[in-house]
Length: 266
Length: 271
Image 1: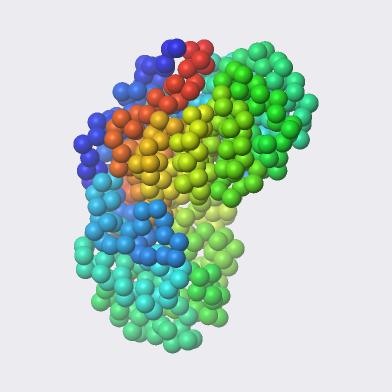
Image 2: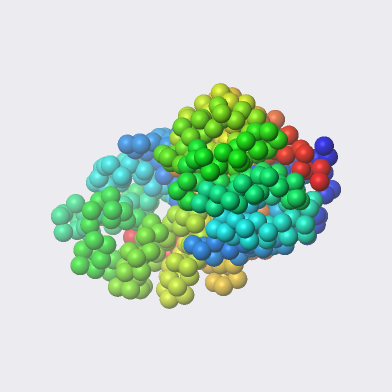
């Protein structure tokens, strides 16, 4: 038997962009909290999440409640304050509900966001059973546009397209693109709506990010991990060692998200 | 910031962009276009460029076209193996819907160059691996101790854990690689790998699930785990990063990324 040797692997490492071992990483999508069907290693506490971030070299993270699949945002949103209180490295994402039921009152909702350092929102129309449209969310979305607060949407492309057609100025972060290559879905949306960004935790497509970069530039691509469902180490190492230039890597790793949060005025 | 780790393997990855102390072997790849996805890098040259970037010396693959049309697709795979014999090893893709192809290739496997074993996409073809049409394949794999890569997924009734158990008992010398490690049915996959010396857990997609790699190592099957990427689907650095950052030893990392596959494919790596 003749095992392949390292020297058999060519060309040399120097032929590719230098790895960014010291890259500052700001994870755009993590999940915490109990669920009905928990993942193998759930993150139930800030300490668990922070330990994983340290191990994988992640500086800061957006934190969404995993519990929204079986609990109301009325309860899960305030529960995230524990994570903000535990560390300034953690940034909560609130989930929205329609204002028609009084579960969310616009003025107090934004007051609450400011008080608790929340600068991004997420929607889960399937779990919370509402239509994500202007009829249901017109008042909230108009306010979000004015305040430049980003909205995270799962990659249900019909829903994403419908929302953007109605609210093209809304700043949207499409998360969890899926591992089945999403370009046929996301490119028409990126072409049409300049306020749309993509979070690339599950977009593992070989060559996918460099191709997006070539077409759209780095400004609309956000590094994320999808932890605690997904392993945190994969997306981080993938980005560090991607064969793209350092400036683009910095924007994807943290710069773009920091800009979005800086511009948000809830 | 840099990951907090004392692992020399992780340090290599961070400092050089790939593992330099040993070559990574990818036990689960494909090639060519696929109807449901646009691939930026799906031809052999592009895939080898990716392998170079990630420190992957060898890819064991079945051509996407062969999963649809075994006759012509495997011929395309043969051409690419002939172009890159030191980098590519083949799985001959079969489908019980084409039983004559299975009978013919099991009789004439020696005419192939650089093919180690077989690939069955049973769930997609809706052909359980226990069908009599597959019997010549299993007999051949058993007789010559060849690997058979299966697409396996939790709850599947074509190549789920029950079917794999039946085949593993009947053909103890066939090397059965559970592609995707019975995704979701982790305990069943681990039990099979522990019970049967000829059953292995391949990690494409499965390894991305938080905690799976550590659970398998903790449960004692580190010598039965194989690195895989579905290339040209997934950037190999993703799963390399997962394995690097999992709470396991460097010895286990090397086992998964190299040693286990080097032992399993030793006859063909020397080609």
